[in-house]
Image 1 (cartoon, one colour):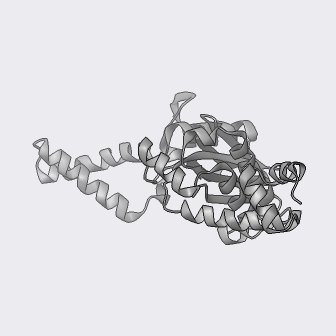
Image 2 (cartoon, one colour):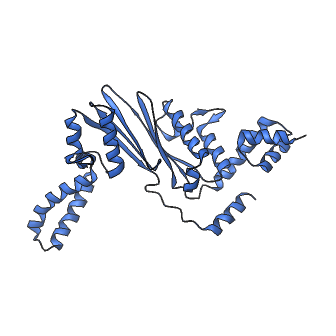
Image 3 (tube, helix red, strand yellow):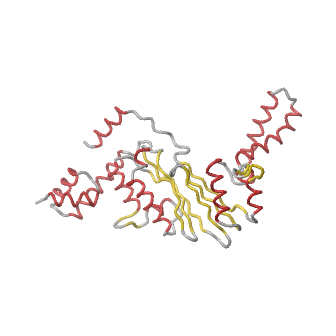
Length: 292
């Protein structure tokens, strides 16, 4: 016989709805472990129904110890859910699990053991519990070498995460660079990182602009070099004016502290993703269908 206490216990274990818990216990003749497995299976079904939805909100964060850091992004459908403690705990659970592992690919990360399953199982269970599509979008692990320091900065409550590795100097210098990266949104770290095709495309654009201003092709070609310097100051971290002292470039600031930027990673939540367009009536119908 399925009792109210059993339903309550299963709800506390899984976070699933009362009716779902009761039905799972009835189907498994009161076997608690079997009921958990059944709800997980149903969660997979519910999660698969949500795969076509857009998840472009969420949070980014960085987890670190003395030698290693992990930067990651997990997405939700709505900003409301991303502010929920359940969602924040999911981010923490994924981040700390990867930090304490050797995972380098998404496949490796999702297969990592977590409690009685894997991180993939945890994600599926959270989708079923929260009721939205959730997506573990990306991560990167960075390991420090001798005389290197992490610069970590989280902006707007997790909408932007900036991770920098600086060789020499100290964590304060590294954090200044991380703050610069978060605020100024560089596309590349060094000029040498800019792809040749991007440089050629920008040169053509700048030449066309100069000619539209009335300059001859020869003069326009000469003007391009100066304009490209301005372009690099916009898109390259090292070339940007340092936000704490605009008289210095970031590279000059770092060099003044006898250091260099080894690596710089910036995650902005939802960048490059299609944004969700809310339709309340459609959302209500979707929820109804999901619960049929």
